[in-house]
Length: 314
Image (cartoon, rainbow, N blue to C red; front, side, top):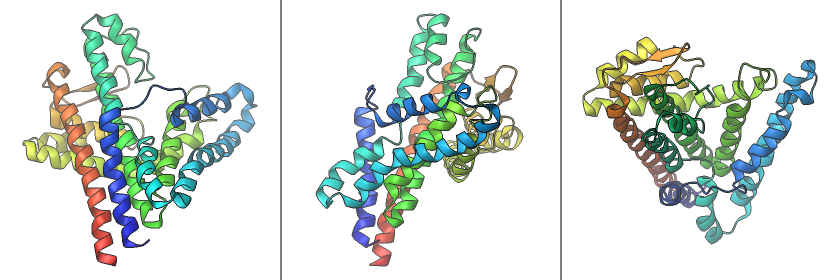
């Protein structure tokens, strides 16, 4: 990796963030994530395989899906001329994360609740897999802001992290694409129902790939809440509630967010995270602000690090 490539990688990251903020995600069946989602929907049907073959099928199709999705990103990153790369790479990277869209979905739930609880239940179905039929307004808001908090890592920090790290070997776009594919497979198949065997590999790999980024995300949240004067509450909730949610990544982020914002995340019958000293009608604004601050701060750090490394190796 030559210094100019590192500078270019940092610039691409910042441009991609700007493009995402400006345009959001196009609602198109031709979006790369939508295309790969249809492929996962095809092979991710347990009825296609006998039970004894499902786990192996999950491993095989995980590899096929990751390669198919990442290959165009790899080829573009390797063979595109400099000017074409500078123009196109931010759009390729933008396909691997979703900041504005995440906000739009969350705010859409809050707006739908103004039309009644039924509208809120229908809107939040777009963000979570849980049964929303009996949720009251506060639990609807909780589901939406939980999804936003968890996806601060899954949909923003983690793909940008892998892009930045693997840009050191000119593989940033491909690495971000692999993570996006892995997280999409987990989102569609990583459940303890009839998909448990087929989704075993996607769920485990998503946990592994998300481990470091989740802790980076949590660190940035704690720094932000320290600046806001709520570090103690965030840290206390992280220690007490960080393991209440199934899995070892999402819970720590949600606990830090809940404590720092003084809110409660609750999935009825599964977990309760945070003390809930403030309702989400009030504290939700702080969640939105924290997501924005961490997104910008991490992107600036990642891009700045790439540019600094370029200066150091020249």
